[in-house]
Image (cartoon, one colour):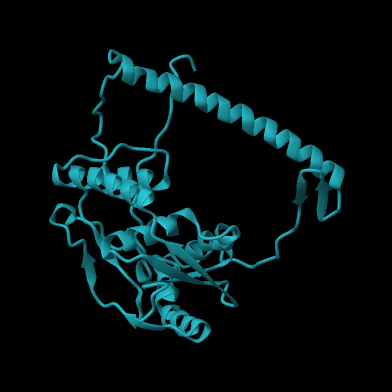
Length: 276
C-alpha cells in the first residue's frame, strides 16, 4: 500500500539544517572557487540518465565545475558538531554513494566535495568514478524502482526510517481487531525471537548500569576518568529555568483555548509474554 500525504508537523525551530545548508551552499561554492581556482556553475535542473533503460535514475547537482579536466562536479556540504565525527576519517559512506550516483547519471569522471565543518573549517575531497560501486548502486536502484512500479513495499529493517515509514503507512489501529499468527510457524517464531532479544536487552542494560554506577562511585567529584581503553566524563549540566505548564494552565486554563497546538498521536508497540 501507499501512505497518505501527511500534514506538515510544527517544529520547534523553523531554521532547520536544510535551511542553513541552502543558505551556506553559495558561500561554500565561492570558497571552493577561491581555494582551487576552478569556476563553477549552478545546476538548476533535475538530471536524468540518458539510457532509456535507466530512466528512473535522477540526480540533483549543486554545481558543475567548468573547464576542468580533473573534476566536473562540485558537491557542497555543511555539517554541525553532531555530524563532525562522520568526517574524521574522510568522506562518509552515504556521501560517497550520493556522489557516485551523480557520476553515474551524468557520465562524469570525478567530483569534488567541499565540506564546511562547524562553520569555521573547510575541507575538499576528491571522489573518482568507481564502476564497481556504480554497478552495485544501479542494481539496488533497479530493484527499488521495480518495487515502486509494482507497488511492492520494500522489506523492513532495523533503521529509524523503517520505523517512521511503518507509522506513516499504518497510523491507526482498528479497535478490537486481532490477527492470529500462532499457527504460522515462521511468523510465530518472530515473537519468540523478540522475547529473547527483549530479555537480552534488559540483562545488558542491568549489567551496563551496574558497571556505570561502580565507576561513578569511584570517580566521586572528578569530572573525568581515564582508562587504558579510553575515558568517561561525568559532568553536571547547566541549571535552567523552565515553564511549569501544568501550574500555568491550572491558574489560567483559558490559555489553552487561546494558544492550542495539536499533536498527532502515534501507535505504541507493547509486548506481552504468555508466561508473564
